[in-house]
Length: 451
Image 1: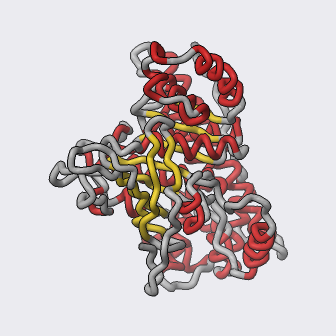
Image 2: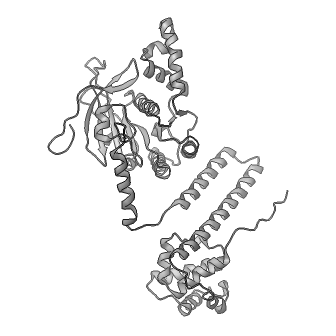
Image 3: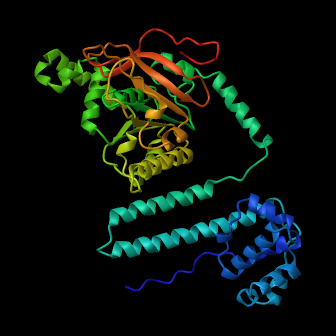
């Protein structure tokens, strides 16, 4: 079936007005760029080419007027391609005297809106072609199309730089609001008081990476945080690449009910009363605004789904378990982990939802014990993990000489851009699958580093 020809949206008179404004006053160029003008916003190739030559003149510190522009076009043999001398001269005709300030920003907004409409139409055409082609891998097409839409959305929301005075009132208003919040923790609580106090919880605009050796109860740590956040009324999305939804729910029952996790794993050891209690706790778990996604495997799936959940469910916290399991572009593990880490950084930036990102640590000598404390250098696969994280927490489980857990566990604040670093005494409660306070607050050294 032949496609219907669609006339792409454009705004010829606005394009001409923008070019004319620059010819009349080249200082207007800087205001146009400050308002977000880009060369691709020009639909007509001739106007886009003219704008390109204007930019070349301005960036090389040469004056821009009809004479210098015509000379530049002739020198690059582009004058005939854009029309002629008469077309260049006509650009300054009819340009409003008020074409500055708010009017310039309105011109740019119109051109940006037409550009976005063209991009959406082009994307829709490409999607239709792929959908009609039986050999096309449709799932991959949908994933890439979602990426393109999110990219367009991000381009549309970018704000130009502004004077400091335009933002100070908003910052002070936020400080005033936080002064009187009734909740004990400003951010989303970790559920461990000795960790909440120095970090102020999980904050908007931050990625918190949680690193741990295999078997260090990273998933239980993250799930306990998500459960605590959900109980406090924060909608949470948990992306699980390691465990199934059912395995996580089993841990939720242990965390909520205090019924020994080993009994839930082997229900033959459950008492009848305990089984009846689980029906009671089911109602509590069902009421949690906690969404578990155990199907997304690739970064191309995780990012758009996270955006969808944020819009549809008002998600306030995103947890990902764990980074090295994410399928991402790249031939080597370093490249894949770097690509995934960068995409997650952009996800946080575009959604303004705090992200709890789990990461595997490399154990250099394979030993357990108090001497084998995790460090930032053990973050596996890519330096991007630490670089993109605002905070890095490292989990340490205490074991005796026989390899049995001692309960002397630690949450190490290895990095915190806005606060102190140091060790938090904690305890992993295996039967309840909860990380808890050990009861001893952290001490502050004279250097301002927590020990």
